[in-house]
Image 1 (tube, helix red, strand yellow):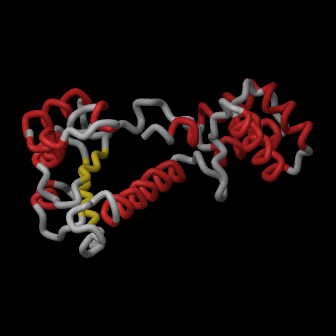
Image 2 (cartoon, helix red, strand yellow):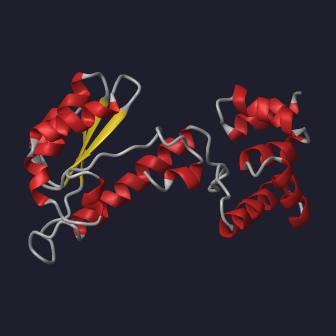
Length: 221
């Protein structure tokens, strides 16, 4: 979730997460928290899931009470739900609309699901998030055209993307990025369609942020 902002410039509300034990569980183990069905329901309720949401429940065993309860709550309130687990025909799979089952086999260190299971699930989450952002038009070819250049590395990446997609030289790409308010998609539409910042912004707004569609719209302005 934290990577979607700088990579795709998404609103923080677009990709969110809950975890048994809360934020502190990211730095300190809180194993008992995953046994609470009540906590699962309460934490999911705070997110107010509905018909416009997709909720992915992750549990390698497929039976973690916190996760099962959270997914059940989300589905009852209209969200589409996906079970991501390593065991077929699990409780989590049964309460979700869809299931992605990564059958990785026994762990090298028995019971340590942070290894094969965790690695497989991270890959699946990468596929889901990248696929979703591609469908939204935040990717052009294999380039992250919505990248948010908040540091020098990302600024240079954005300039490189503009050079590659428009044929502009590095100086022109950098100058246009600055003129676009450091917004990579705006700069791209400006260069590709030969329009002003205001026109590029209007085209992006009309296309819902879909860069390829916005470029086509801007060329007709």
